[in-house]
Image 1 (cartoon, rainbow, N blue to C red):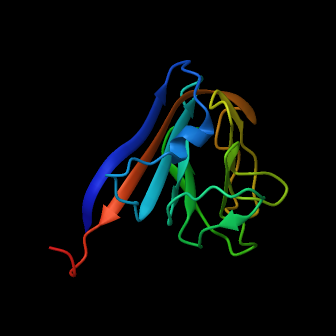
Image 2: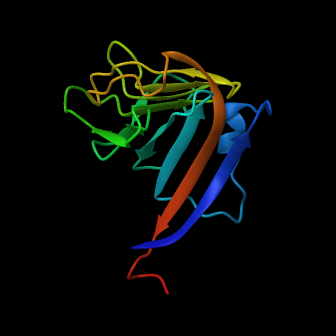
Length: 155
């Protein structure tokens, strides 16, 4: 049961933001149990992923997460979900200048620091095809949602 869901960040249009601003939490905001990244390209595809842990930026390339992480796309019309294949443990990587899901030969989804562009390609982690219309794309929108689950121990 989800106790609270809220959009934690929303970047629309051509507003130039830095990825590191996603990780500046409000002191009154609880740390979410899960986060969902939803983005889209200028050709109308909507894609992203569900991360099973809060995003924690690291100074070095370090993958995080578990096999509960997945990516999705609407590039072919109907929503399509890609779950972890078990081929590797490259679920997601979070740096101040990069947010990437999946790995192997390509990231399933990678957002650049300026949040204006990104890349997507087939990843071994999720067995996905390109999530956007083209491998290098311009972002139309970026949303990051946080979900806090209800607990029987909290009133």
